[in-house]
Amino acid sequence: MSASSDHPADIDFESLRGQIWLQLQRAVGERDHEWRTPVLAGVDADGLPQARTVVLRRADPNAGTLQVYTDSRSPKVAELQGQPHAVLVFWSRRLNWQLRARVTVQVQTGGEQVEAAWEQVSRTAAATDYLAPAAPGSVFASRAHGDHASHHLAVLLARIDALDWLELARDGHRRVRFDDSGACRLIP
Ligand SMILES: Cc1cc2nc3c(=O)[nH]c(=O)nc-3n(C[C@H](O)[C@H](O)[C@H](O)COP(=O)(O)O)c2cc1C
Image (cartoon, rainbow, N blue to C red):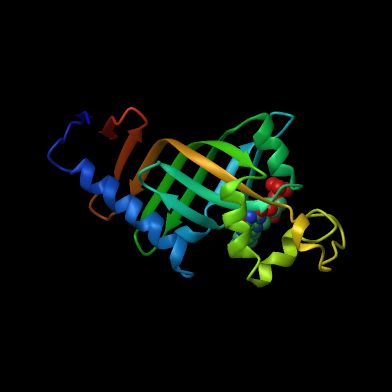
């Protein structure tokens, strides 16, 4: 890893990267972790910004990927299929950390990861969201149960291209950017 900064001794980048991933993994398992519900921002078909809150379902430090579940009929799916570059924004008051993850999103509507996700979701109350006959967001969407074999669960597999970490502190904020080549730098 290369590091360039005016204060190179200030931050152990490798340790920071590890702490960030640890928090992402905790957020998946801890219901009250503030990083559990990031905002996923992208661009719609008209090139206009679009953003929404999602639940972080998986964080894999080795693959450098994050996962979010959604309904394959939701507008964000068509958006991301047309334009896969997006940003996931996390904020934690407890940590005083903001994380902006620039990602490339692959929409998975079938296959091993989707079936594993469905296996997990189908045992929860949220399953009905993915079985409803009407797409989410439609007016008076019914929550009726459908055929379990024909769910609409999709996995958004977000590969991290760059991370922008900001720590708010009274004695001075710290900001570090990690990019996919492994380079990182402290931003003044
Ligand atoms: C706390 C919270 C968590 C949410 N989690 C998800 C989620 O994991 N997946 C999802 O598709 N929508 C989730 N939503 C709903 C989205 O924010 C959004 O309203 C919906 O998916 C439609 O977005 P779209 O029109 O951009 O596709 C969540 C909303 C809230 C308030």
